[in-house]
Length: 251
Image 1 (tube, one colour):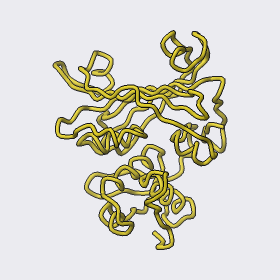
Image 2: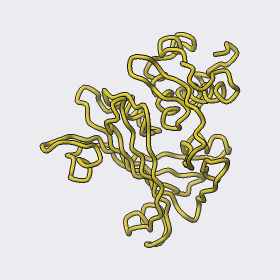
Image 3: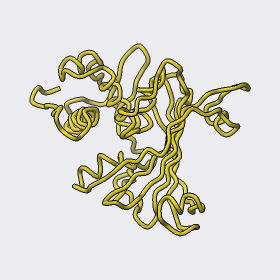
Image 4: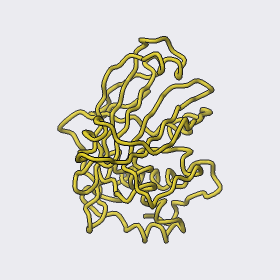
């Protein structure tokens, strides 16, 4: 990592996002080659004088994008570009709004511990019995217009308290890295077409039955165990999905 790449700790942009952006740009410039290991969490934390938790959250973001992958006990490595199949990417909302110069807001509707129902047990491959899940529900807005509703679920770890200060921008990999004992190393996203329910329509300010994009994300640990799952809906009248060199991106 070049010493000239600095992190502004006084910026409104979260530190973990600044670090993820630095590493992302270094990978794209070829400073880290496919298959090459990134510096360790400790090395990165010491270099930028930030916490290891912040580094872990940044790495989790890059893992979810498919730019890097983790091997338990060995480190984090740069992934090879995937050209054999078509995948899609919806960038982190707040980061994209900053890049576009738009005013945005993430509203946390609720964060609570729930008992896993049959759907969640199936998603997390849980055995019969009582299992606790952390449920986060947020609304994403830009220029005072609500654009997306997100429901995120992670396996509850009793020793990890919920801190409101850490929930301002709760991405799924970040939540897992911060609020559980699991390490997110890979993610799978599924894009579906959907229509707004009465509740969703009321929250997003659209008509019931309005078209939506539904994105389901499953995050896995090194043993390929599901440790996070989310359902995010995006307004069909404000988003469109287009293909660029094998990647789908929001315009």
